[in-house]
Length: 255
Image (cartoon, rainbow, N blue to C red; front, top):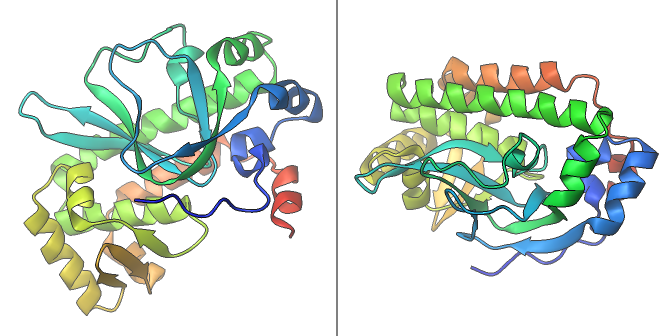
């Protein structure tokens, strides 16, 4: 699937963690940040492999997928413009976890990659960068835990609503390019279950689905049909990053 047109302008400040950095820290990182395309289905990190770069998505969304011996994989978390991919680099490891977890691009777009050495050096300065990365990591862990509980105890329809809402939070529009097969793979459920759940949401007027495109027509309706897991994850990100300001985002977006 082709990448979307490169947005003019494109800036590291479209990633919220980078946008929140003070001028001095931001200036130190910018020369090392490289804009890279992230193509649908591209694997950025594999289990046990050496990690050379951290990735800060801007318009792309990356799924953290945990694989089972049966060949089935399930999404345990997503990373978009709110975060960073590669927390092992500043948590004391040079490789991704040896557990069967991989990072795969869910929504094509762009992001910035940063050499792991540079990220570790900045983290070791024990300044605002370190604090923000640790807070983000705690929020990511909450998302992983909540996803596990949701996949075990809630209906496919509730899981689908949660997944759609979390994806929407990382996108500038209400249009998703995503097949039911890919969603089923992310949630670790049968495609037929997603088809049935999406059909009910469409009949209720909450979404419109056609040929791999999902349009969200009634976000409030989705929020009313999902489980508490969406609100828990959203509240935790808001709590931990409540004092993170993004002074550069408005200037980049022209608002």
